[in-house]
Length: 433
Ligand code: UDX
Picture (cartoon, helix red, strand yellow):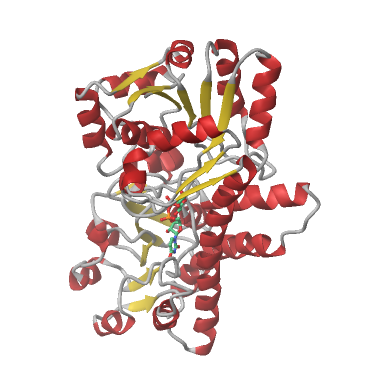
């Protein structure tokens, strides 16, 4: 089967490589020439474990190629995946400009029956708009629009694509359903559950899933904040909660709040959609509110621990990416915290195993960029662990302590044990400990 994937961001690239791995002939296209040039040179514009090997293997096998000629790719392929960015717009709704630009190009070049598969996360009702736009622009065109949301986590996107725990297909067309099942037949054969439904329901499944996961995080952060006030240990609370199969232990790690390109965007988009339809989504609003407040609470923790005034203090920051194993800093709590520290007159020296280049694009010369966790401790009034990279898990505590001006350790991911830190002579602050 011949497939075109429009958009070579982390969803488009993983989808393109994954579908080629399933045996499809895939052309990944993007209008950003530099990106395609990089990909044609075998370089990856993003950091995603395992993706480079998957890409090389499928390019070598001749199943995967890259092109900037979008009209040609539209004409030559049966299934057109839309994997363009759908960021938040200023009022929290999803900005669908890139999506509709791609849809226009499809309408202009559609030359035969096509299945247009929307992989990007889009508000409920978008598939219907896509159908209307193409039908208006190309009244004689025969096509179906399928909603095929992704559930990829950055840092494990390749694994999540090749071994999803479900495939969601939204369409009313039997022909399109059959084609999509063919595409995902390697998964069908290993009994991956398929949810076949209409477009609106498929679109809602994505938002409902992500918002629920975000709600779990805001919930455990709220419990952690209450634990701090009553002397309970949220670590133990979360572990005991997770032993209840209905709750599950996943996504119950308290921290500085969720970041990334999905949860913040998707929770806002679902909130905005509900409001636009005249419903007041109180719970979703709270998920967002708790999350925004959690980042601010981290700044307050640091400020309190350094004596109430951040002005003139030197703060070492461990981790800038929004989560480990990615260089993505979009809506990263670390970025928010560092900006607030600078605003309060503190100096910041930061280290991240993968996101230093991305951090420079935001902070330029406003912070110092150091080579490792120990350098981040040099002369620091406090050390703040923002992202739980593995290399931050077994640090030599005495080495850190001798380098620091004062042994204050703010652990926003509860990586370290409070007792052990206090025995090592640190003033330790966790979340909900
Ligand atoms: C998420 C969803 O997991 C994925 O299914 C969807 O397709 C895209 O959005 P992603 O944003 O890549 O994936 O990362 P995820 O691992 O879900 O973490 C999101 C944020 O929540 C990160 O900032 C992470 O640090 C935070 N988080 C996650 C917590 O604070 N506590 C947790 O227990 C889990």
